[in-house]
Image (cartoon, rainbow, N blue to C red; front, side):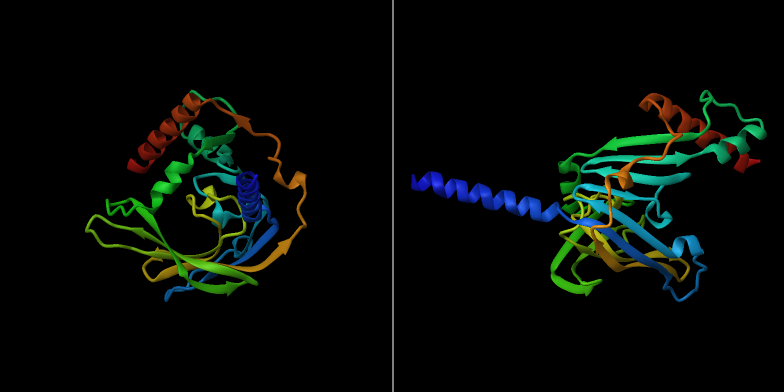
Length: 251
């Protein structure tokens, strides 16, 4: 009986820990600033950003957190990521210049992906290959940001000459999924980060307010009017886009 009770207690404790790690529900609000020695103009629509969170679900349409051309918003459900992209203007421009595409749609498309935990876990392994990166978690260093304890993480990336270009990020462990795919799988929610934009320029986003609650199921729905392409059709579209852009640039 003693072993059964002990096992039950351990399981209950483990379950409680897992729930506590991912049960935050609310909005993380940020300011985006130019912080380099050379000033940059930050557009008004970019200067404020936010990420809505409900446990393992996240949603944002803030430009500072979106990657890829035409990105409009991104929805995360644990390890699954769905990104809405609007390529209508780019396609329209290229078509007006004589480009032809197998794809005949409007250009508003959905891109879906799913990561595996082991792929994110591998990012803690030192990798000095040019263009690769790895994470160094420095849990011994913390600071308070927007009322939450933020832990230090350093992303290391080496160039062709073998020079490291470290980027420091401060993140909260108790907000968001265990692997945050919006930020390459970091184990929490970034609260502050400075990104080098080259030639003395830098952009810093910092959490200014973390609001509990204030989100509902409708906040995690994708907008209407986007179509999902097969992996093959999507790959073909991006390959054709790249080819046509390179042709125009070479003229």
